[in-house]
Length: 364
Ligand SMILES: Nc1ncnc2c1ncn2[C@@H]1O[C@H](COP(=O)(O)OP(=O)(O)OP(=O)(O)O)[C@@H](O)[C@H]1O
Ligand SMILES: [Mg+2]
Image 1 (tube, rainbow, N blue to C red):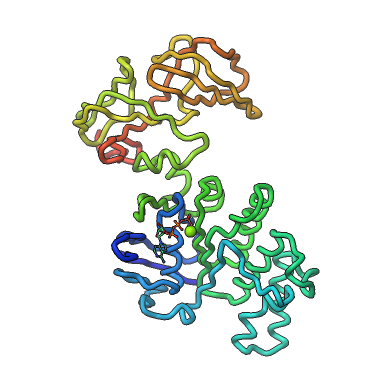
Image 2 (cartoon, rainbow, N blue to C red; image 1 turned 180 degrees about the vertical axis):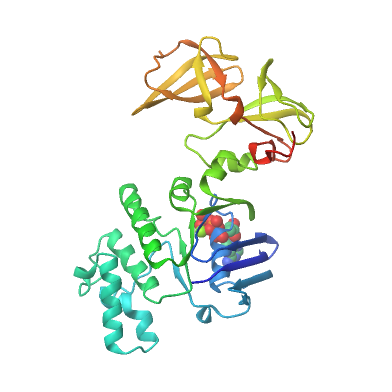
């Protein structure tokens, strides 16, 4: 087990910057998820940590040892790729025990550890089968088996569930977490799926355009996003964004949306733009006759105990999550009220939140 620390990590491919000045620490035993849209630099970051890619700038430490220039083979880190590359001519056992045979461990030990790992992954009954005929879930278990059999200091997993169908992904998410708890190894897990990230992470590291934007626990990221990008990327359906009047002084606790004054948690910095953006999650809006904003019901989706109501307002199309006991009809005019304590305000020029309960206490 190990702590992984990267400092000012940068990777350029020619003129193109794939990872820009990343600095963060992954704690010993942590399940750390790197999340971001395609092309934001997740795999490149992971490959640098693994030693498969040399950084252009910056340092990588494994338990305080500077491994920046150490070849991958000497870093004692296991890597699981998205497309699980199994050796097609070997059976399940040979695929799993491969790293131990390379290390030339005694046969008896290899057999014992292979059995343990296979039992843990519930594929011990498949050990002597060829990998060719396996289901994608079992193939992924074999790939995981090969990674964990080494007892590496850390595990790097690059979208390991990407090739599985939805139902299997949920199952494998749970299995991976259980496995993580049993092995309790430092794990860095890459995904572009925010649901997966929310479900699994101790902390989520959100990246966009080669940069790390925020690193926090899932709930913290959900409730206190530091930028509009993070706010919009996390949550299904996405946070509602409304245009508001952009002139705000520090400590202000009201904002004008569509000509109506709406209460907000106090701003911590001034905003001097033509426009501001108010962010409201669907559960932070409610329906009533006398809301501060009015609109017409465009769609209703039932989701068990809750329903998602889409309302067209002058401030745009908004999603509202309400209990299904509230009766609404298509085309009906409804009022919308905001849960004022939860609203976020963003500066559209910098993308940053200018108010947030994140800054509790900053302004009295
Ligand atoms: N060897 C390379 N040469 C040139 N550009 C590269 C190379 N490897 C990656 N890139 C570019 O760097 C950027 C980041 O790539 P990376 O694979 O890290 O993204 P990612 O976040 O893992 O995306 P995805 O979710 O699609 O896997 C992309 O624009 C990619 O095209
Ligand atoms: Mg990738």
